Image 1: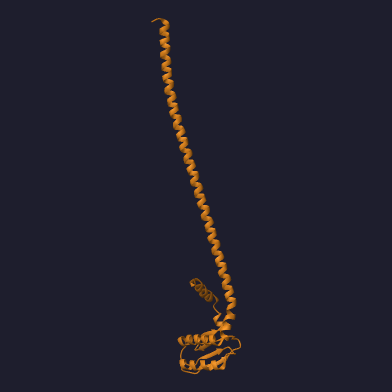
Image 2 (image 1 turned 90 degrees about the horizontal axis):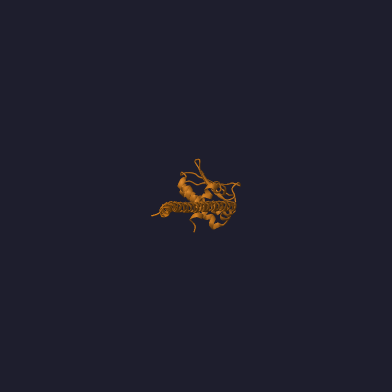
Length: 202
């Protein structure tokens, strides 16, 4: 083998080694580049998933806040409607009760109700009956007989110009107030009863 052939063989050997090393370096670089691309892609997907999750959470929060505002508005509206209804009912109540007192049939129910309350709570003995001045005499006498049977003594009946409807029974410091004013004395109780009635109605 001459010098030229040896030189060419040596160059070929060096070139082969260089190509082998370059291929190894290039393969390693390609592997690292592929790993970096895969990592970058995974991180991008994770960021995207995180962004979607944050957007979904934000949407849920906004929806929950909107639902809470709507529920609050509905409650306020219902409270305002109920308050208006109670004001209207309270404004109409005196006239309605006066109408009941002025009608003989419902007045008889009124008298019977007050008398039943007095029988249950009042002591036996003389009762004082203070009543609306326009109450028919015959009905007064009928009540006097019923009171005499219940209390064992004739009552003292007294008209009072301050009473527009109903009557009250007094005995030994006790009072059963069945007057219009007495029935209207406890507005809170009336409103509570009306609310219970409204809530129980279909």
